Length: 356
Image 1 (cartoon, rainbow, N blue to C red):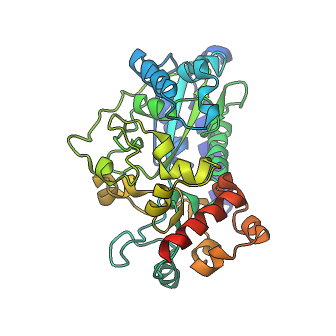
Image 2: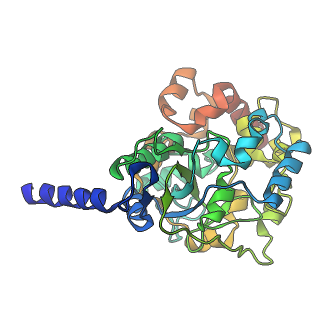
Image 3: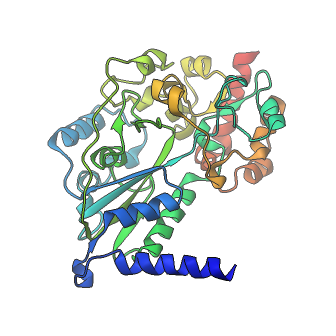
């Protein structure tokens, strides 16, 4: 045990001493290879780095046109601080580098108990419980601990191990600030924005959470942007139950089941009720049909993101009779609270009406 601790201490000392080149602290250049090593050790599946600049003219025009057309629905926060979204240097003073990371959240396959991706709840009895006929479901990302907490904590761990101070050497972002995360993930070489509006990572798929480190230091090597490999495939466009996908990597959120069941507080449109299926929180259909996911998706090894047994154990009757107290217990530290108890029950009632 003593030798193990000494070895680990020496490893950390080596990284600390070699992480930055021999420059004044405020001008130091970080070594990308060592930073990537720390990121991989923290459990991230992919990472890349690019210079912090204004987004491309094409992306700027696309985003502003998308907002002008009202495709963000009632998500008014997306229309705020657009200047910062277009230029991360306005978000972090002195920003020089954007580090984009991806963490696998795929819980496993729930459609076929005989396929190779059936690690949904780890144990066979849990799988059988989940595969019950007419089981009500959530979007795959929602079964574990709130990704905002998990990814942000791991990025903070990376900064600490790299000898960087949050608020001085940069900031951590996970889907809660005006930063164009999929655009920067593309620029960092992680993958490309598919027709389903998700970032597709080659050899891995799209069941990933994204996060960013916006640093005030340069790195010694930046990554090249990723190329799009969707080709002529349009399965996601054909499968989207509400035809929310626009074919150019953007969507009309007002039509999307994920928006309607999570973000929107209004009564669900009749068409949405008819097409929800048994998923009462979000929608995964455009991702499920993607060939990259069908071939490469593998269950996450991140303990915090594995499905909670309390959720897997729920029956349709349990969901329909869910109380506020049960809701709070089951979804403590969960992203599902985004929909609020009232929104969740609205969705569950819609599923019940559809199945009657």
